[in-house]
Length: 559
Image (cartoon, rainbow, N blue to C red; front, top):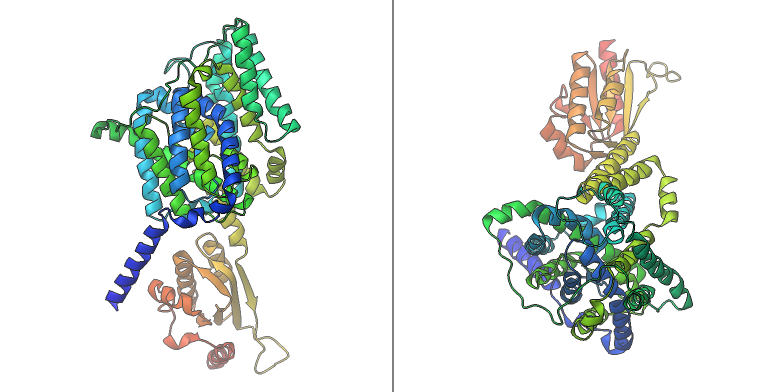
């Protein structure tokens, strides 16, 4: 029997491992859908270009590193990930985490952190942790998104207040405080030019898609600003020289000392990469009929994507819902579209690095300003705030902590708040009803010496004290029947309280009978001592009539 169980486990493990690998089934629809996939990939690549550049710069790194991440990580996640239509690369949420890492450890540490985080995400996929994201409540996700949007918006302030990036440690690591510091130190001779660039890009992003949704307003806006700054002399800082090829892959140097220093940051990045990628893949599956996503494989793919990105000097990658949405709306059906998106970006590096180097940083700031605002859905915010107090509090707490402290801490606290309210609501469904039984001598009257206590709903640690007080408050009776057949969930604390209820009543001279213990609760009651607390082992019944008859015999003997 033991050998059979071992063999069964090995077969299950082998099946799981096989399910994480690419297969021909990933491209089953490609013979029919490849034209649409290629068009979607080209469209998504064009839309991804300014975002990749912008997120690279906004992280405190370089536009080149943003592009490398979009190319390498985007390709690896497309091939190995668990979604048929998801597009991966640098994202705003990751920028929020990288900025303080760059400030504390320098830009060089990001490559090492990316490698460590990638390995952690890969391990999470192998350990089957992909379903964990389903435990995050929707209000917490939306609060997290709102907080990220606010931080992305605030992080663009350096690009529009003055030329040159502030050095590490010059300003607060908190985006809100740093934005205030930068505004007070702004070069007001520079601001009119930068705000004009932001305005042009924003107008293009808002108006041009109304002409045709497939036209990339962000790219056109950047092109317009770049042409104008080439014709008209301005003080606007540009991206600068971009290499015309990918760098050679190399392992970042990681010592035991640096590993200990960077591991907490890598853990935060890994958690964020896993959460954001799985949420994005889940949304993508609901938007497209290309098939469900495989959460564990998605983690494996995202882990490999970040590992690959680090080998080429890039930054951490995650699934990007904005680019994924463009991909789906453009007709994507298979992974060919996300692969094509990476190929398009690679071709831009190889053939158009010169023009890209002249793009003003303020124009990229404009793209990210609008992107941040588009992440905020007012209707969703109002719906959550008007739903329940628990959801509204969870949403608000998550958003505030995201902006004020830390993204992962915000999600954790948001889940704790949601759990507290959920447990509080669940505890209120636990009911205790006191019933009476007719007297044998006078059937038209109830027997005052016998009380039947019926339990309904769950009995666990939140509701246990209340239940103890209600049951032990009984007075003037000589027999109590605890009716358990309607009891749903019981934990160790609930079972312990039941044993204390029995002992307390027995000490007061009240005989306790228990009726209807469910088979699923029986072992727990035996281990915790509920049944041993009874005065006699025959005081446990399966039938209510038998329990009532036994109770009357006790009353008659006492009488």
